Length: 211
Length: 211
Image (tube, rainbow over all chains, first blue to last red; front, side, top):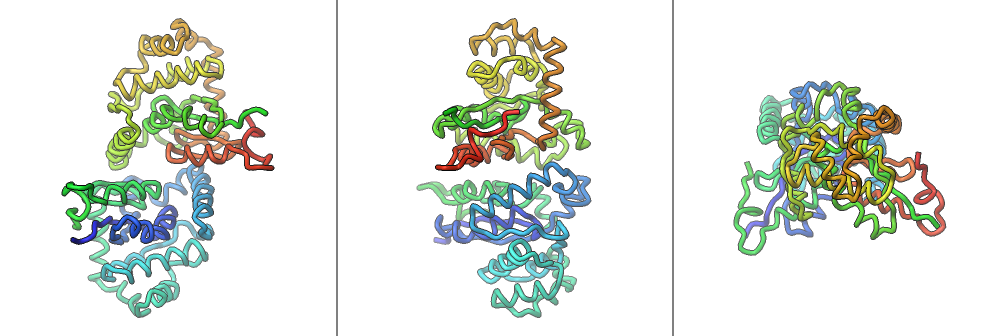
């Protein structure tokens, strides 16, 4: 029996995704669920809504609250948190690099190292040296950062971002269990519970659509 | 010793507020916390952000998700849920009527009856007969709906909405513990925990600012 899966869709610049990224594997494992990491780009989705930057910059009251709220949640999780400068970070290089990596624990480890560099240590994730160091920390070749400039990698990330829009994603983090969407770090627990098939239930969990 | 308090700020048209309104008193009581109900109008705050209706209408992907998510949460709480038509409802009459009522259990009961009429039974809360029935159900005079057209009531609601904007509110439901903001039904539990003073702590809870 394959384990049930949850798809974890995110943009590396997303503050609330930091909270999910640092706890999802441990939490999913306690539910017996596997995580499929799906980095994509929010920029094109935000632009389609008429936004040229993060809504946290466009709407200052919402932004002021977000910084307070993420710091509060990070503190509750025992995570260091520093406000990236500039915000949002340019996540293109990290997303392309991740998009080229095969699914598995090294991809997950790379992603966590990127979030840690960005939000725990205040590093700039558009810097190839930062991304190379994250690859090495995940046991990967630092030269994998060079795949980011391959046309095939660029196409793969564009295709993934198109799929995100088609599936109704509008923010990050987002979780899919089969085709049911859960948006936001606050829904991670609900999504994991949904991923676990109930006795006799064949409609969720391991039977889901991994497209 | 007065009990610690939480301020509960909301617009009667807010879908996620329905989830909070129907459970906040019971949950607050288990924490030993009193609830101050503070209806206001989101419309002016949304207009200041350039929005002429609910963001759930302006951003269709977000709206599609919201209907699914609120229905899912209502189901988990054992609440009936019907999508109001039109959405958002015009909440002016309900807000003015509530703004004229003194703080206390009858105000809370009136507010819950309005949310129940709107979201559990699909009634139109801009209808004075619906609001009158909610007043009666809360043990109040149905004629209190007429206070909604008093200049003093209109001014009081405008002043309250101005205060909301000044205090950094940008959505509903919002909770204040002293001047610390918690936004969204998902933060209700966190806000209540914050309201309870820790042993020897005099900086939160009952010492808060009720302005």
